[in-house]
Image (cartoon, rainbow, N blue to C red; front, side):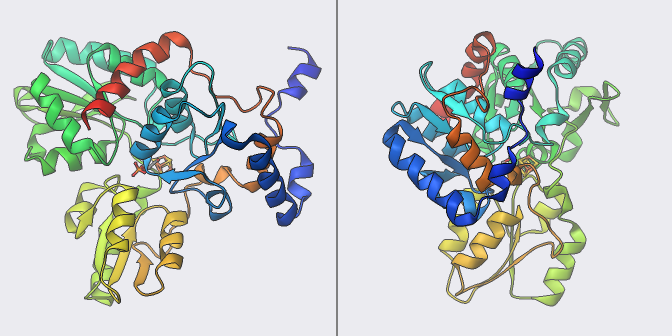
Length: 365
Ligand code: 13P
Ligand code: SF4
């Protein structure tokens, strides 16, 4: 690539967007929305910053955003305010003529990065040797398109935090065992809720290429990929104990990406949308400690002055990768819709297999 082409394709935001006032930036979003009308659609995940959510045409949890993407046949430009795997999913679920954009290409997900396709292939070969054709792969949507394609190719499906129970139940109707990628906590929490014992769950270590399990392998029903969310791992049992001591009437609600011990001690656990709905329908004056990402927790606090709401961990920060999408990046993306700078495009072969896994989820859950 020539230096000129490289500069043109550079993903460093031009300085002018950094120096524009908030009012100028907001006006530019308003103008773009007016200019493109229904040709432009801006979905945003609940973890996005307020300055971005303010301009979203739809907000939702991962399942809702996948459903919304699949249903939208009208918009030509889908500016996805979320992280990379969500934009990839939207691209797979939309038509050839629709283009999906991610305002900052660096908005990845540390959990999705914990499983790559080569590690997955190696794990699968070893697990087939150990267990034969008894395993169905399931992947949390927080994974690369290549892993979704792998799962689709092997008859499995994607899951989100709001349909994981349904999908795990479905998986056990197909095969004796499941391999659950890449979030060990969502996998463990879901399987446990469905009555599978912790002693029936093994952990797959993708770094050492080994299975972590003490006992007779014949007993294993669930193989959990050793991945986790670097945001939700910061909610601890000590946070629960401190909250219970300080606020005896407070209910604790957490995301199932938190570890088993925290979910076990919490009163409720569910997806970001589940958390939102639970607080919305809670009694006036009720008290809540929430164990999820801080942009969402702060928004819930702001929208519910009639309730006492805190973060389960008082020292929590937002998800750093979700936070990469800010107003300047949104405006930069809207200004450059007609070049390829921010386009997320999953190659046809990968998309054609990943869609099997996604459609199984969308049709079933
Ligand atoms: P949900 O919105 O589906 O609960 O997912 C949370 C999440 O971590 C997305 O990255
Ligand atoms: Fe990934 Fe965790 Fe951030 Fe969600 S909150 S995008 S799982 S790092």
